Image (cartoon, rainbow, N blue to C red):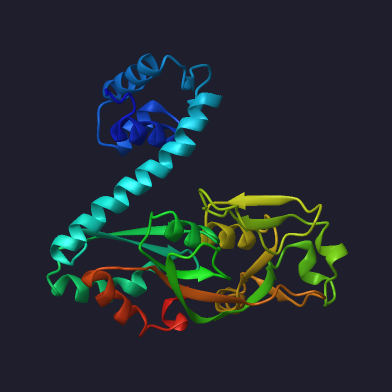
Length: 300
């Protein structure tokens, strides 16, 4: 039987959907744009369906294309996991490992550990990805990452991973000194806070439902890509919101933020080190070292 849908074609469709254009997909896959266009046309001709709407600047999937991608991602994930299992069986060492690092944490904090890892001579390639909020769990359960550092809150159901609490992250409600809320008496009620724009870091989940926290019903929201952007927006007075305690206190000492008491505070969050079950020798070595780190070592 001549299969019309190849894994290579599914990778192309996935890349276009994620990047928003044929040209951006070509760049991410290290291929020329004409090869991407050809792959899509060839698949559409084979299936006799249109997968993308060509109108407009952004490549958007048709209903048929969305169904193909939804099911196709399961196949891509299964194929990737099978490839890794075969290689692990042969050598006991992973060819590559993905590490999801929550955006509350300093990436440079794990550089010394990575140098130690490379000194072991595993030959394993490391990919570090920044994830926001629930994206730390999403990266793990979807197979994008083998280890997730700083995943907040309880993990999703379904298993396939092990999780160990790192520590508790506490938050302060902070505003710029020139923001109207800065001079109002504490504690601030929800009704008062709701009148002003909140700043939020967008959850980077691709498959799990995105999470939000600290945003009140009916409140205007400025959504930014990560915690650093959120911090800088609050310093600029574009909005208000919760920041990790140490980060807020550091900027308050510099006179760049004011910490405010609130009537109904955001609850603290447990941060987890989590990893996919049945890892190889390289993952096991990394986990032993990562378990020695504390949250204080890692937080911004």
